Length: 81
Image (cartoon, rainbow, N blue to C red):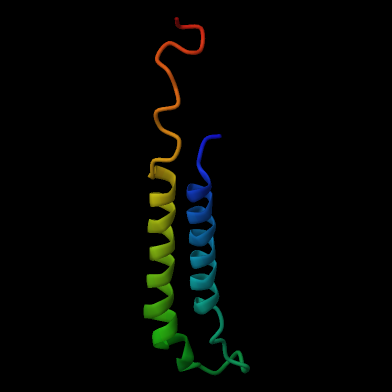
């Protein structure tokens, strides 16, 4: 197995964080296409959601790089005696 259960759990959590961030960015469109809606500039969309997305991406990098099953491979393969 390439990664441990811890790595996969962290990857799943990071995907959820990224999805939550993108969902928080969604919306804010006007019902009238000719009218401007200032709701697109809410703090939720321009501050909170990008921070959550960046945290998700950082967690994904950590989940990929975190040590899982290191030390289980021998030098020279299985045929080495």
